[in-house]
Length: 435
Image 1 (cartoon, rainbow, N blue to C red):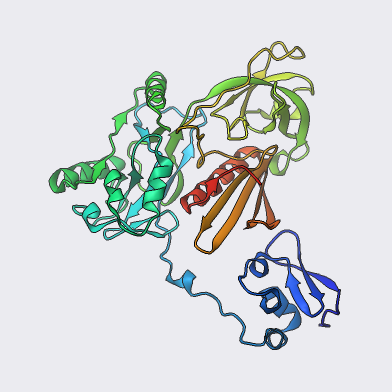
Image 2 (cartoon, helix red, strand yellow; image 1 turned 90 degrees about the vertical axis):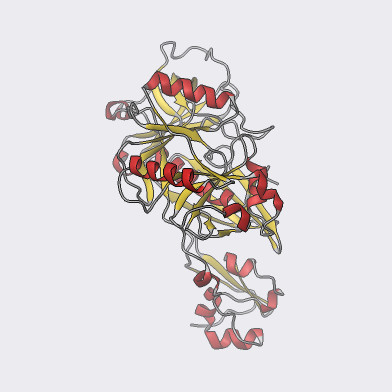
């Protein structure tokens, strides 16, 4: 393969949707991939796998005047992510009478493996010895929790590695025993008996109550949210503990109804190819977003006309003011008239802070996160448009790298975005205004 002349560029396919660009500027070779941009070396000493593939290993070694960088051993040393049970969001589509109901804690998910706490990504959470005293050798699934409206303070303590006395403000609230055989009731009984016997000072079992029906669910949800809580968790009776996202575990938050005007029809993909995939709609304040769920096949074949008003249901507003998990309910009976409802309102979960993890993105206003610590200064941005989830990331001050993943409908796209946001906030990323 011929080498690049001074000033020449060439595209080479990498892991992103768009190819990377290699360039020679006065003998300095560059690549647009994140691996080349994010190195803390002088630009003439940087290399990457794309340059080595194009120019050859020996040519790159001669150019930088030394051995090529070796692959990091960190990945091999990092513990595997624990096999956690993850929840789906309740979409008003399941009867929950008889399910076990508990408060959804706004803390840091933690897996006790019998010796140490691990985060969802498998990173060790360095709790003091006195904090874990009394915990059993059996694995436990739970949350490191301080109080309602205290998520950021909790994260700041848990992410530290100094095992300080600040941990005295934290409680490990456990809600499952992953390796105990049997149904959820058997595991709950194990937890209650074990904690009654061992009485750990900084741990307790999360209270579980039977849901008596939709009215009971709404009453408990209103009570928890009035206290500043995040919502509820519902666990199917008799269910087993299984790694991954499962419909036997549901998270429940408030749903509200509102109206919006239809401004466009978004073409469907996959199963909905050839018909409407989502409605592009607008709120009275001009906020734009898409509604992609709640439609019958007949409604997708003959969607509400542009200019009509629809009623939709949603959980809450994102930081950008866009309804989260919007679902079509009906065409408004006053379709074509002015929208009479006020702008939807959002419930805040801490002093001046709306929910971060667990909120999804929207196409009009991407959500922007930053991580600054040690030698790292990185940003991460996510947006959802219909069934497309677009992520932009890189070092703060650069344009970063962009990738897009497509789904058959907006519901799956929003669920994927929520999972990514939770993973980033678990790693210490904090949401802020884009610069």
